[in-house]
Length: 320
Image (cartoon, rainbow, N blue to C red; front, top):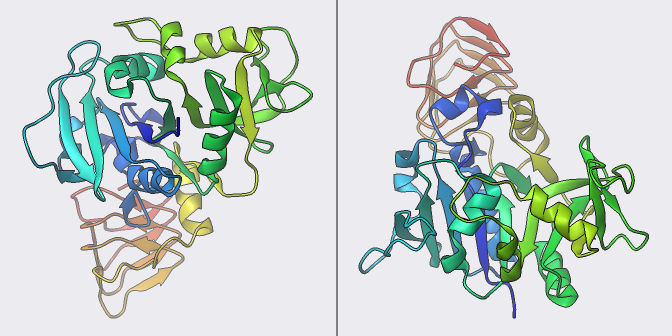
């Protein structure tokens, strides 16, 4: 059966991106004027996904304006713990938010939405990943293999924790925990799981997916597909977030609805809608979030302006 549904992981605390994530949950942090989660949903939709779930925990009220309110009565709780859900739509597709009062981690979050998943496979996508990888190939590989899990992996990157078999289609070890070899590939944070995988996850508790992945790897049942021919960025820390705005060209750097006063000097920076950069300000390699203010005396180098306080003065590599 084709994979038609996706689960976006949005409940994490985003500690590596603080203080940015003191204002917004990590998946709502803007990348070229759009929330990271919006880019993730678009990538999944391009692969044929028709319905979405997102789990929330940190700053849940910030999700109030994400997507559109769905017509009709709200969905009843369908999580394993009776967790409240919120029915919405995103570009005409069903979107359900599952709030976790207590953080459940990835395994617990998946188990918690087992009833929503039902008897179909689901594409899982970390909320802090930006990717142009061909997710349709991941879905096709998962459907063809019949395996409980298929991981999208990369050959290059810093966190080479996955060891593969000779065919490259099975993961045989993770971080050497099974003693089967050193890691050669990077886990992308995007994967497909079949409903049977949920049986390996404990119910009603905080849990990682890694023990279940290791159990499958030991049995030769943890599938992989190498997807190297595309962009893949983990935007979970400040440096990678700024670098993405320098490396990518996803939209006009200066949003048409930004207010850039005459006399402001802007180099290699991104300014969001409704933001104001006053005359005399100097920006270099910086990101100004939607609606934020930069004073005329500001000299900002490699900064992120994210708060409701007007940025002023000279700053380098700071979040304001």
